[in-house]
Length: 284
Image 1 (tube, helix red, strand yellow):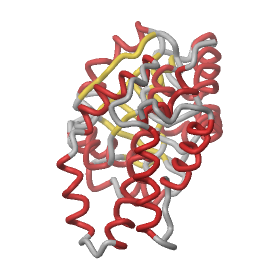
Image 2 (spheres, helix red, strand yellow):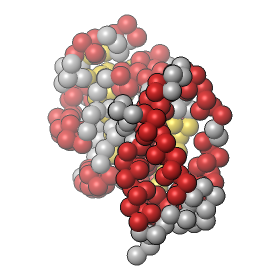
Image 3 (cartoon, one colour):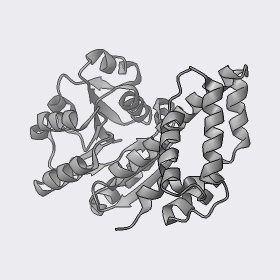
């Protein structure tokens, strides 16, 4: 039975705290909105009036907050009450540069800090599913790896560079948000074509997105734009999509069309459509 604290009990932090209490850990939690902490009492989570009260006596402190500024503020408020061997485990999605600076500063001052962002929502957090990444001092990671593994379906140590997990979290979220934008455009096209929205989403199941990432995505990363779907042809298809949508709001395709036009004008029309990523893989 571990004595742990949670600083931040929004949707994700609250789910983590609930799961930890159900596993039998002693859990104390703090949140700016105390009603969110009190709602966890039914699971055995004890509410704390301040970050310092929450972390007092805890061996692990899990931080699940909004951004870098709040992380800094809350750590400062909790720091004097931290046990010398307590480990701060920060699950917040943060700016890589600030994460690196924070890790270096805290660990140099004797405060154990590890950054561990996740790809999971509240249901996954309650059921130890999804993925968690960790980066920072290897010894710190190894000391909590068993405990962290109980919180997630997959735990990946990214390395000693403290900002690696933060950077990779942004990569993953970029894909998620990008897909959401594309799906919004798909639904708009479906609406314009009198196709049921759910039927349109089911159609996407015919596409092997993993194979596209493994094939075209890897080629893009290597700067290989040998055509299998020429940019000129892809631009024609985007024109058809935009004409079909009419005056309806489109989220991503207009910006893609604009970039395609720039690349075609620069002489890349006969390259694969993946040449959209050329600027990202050019080597100095």
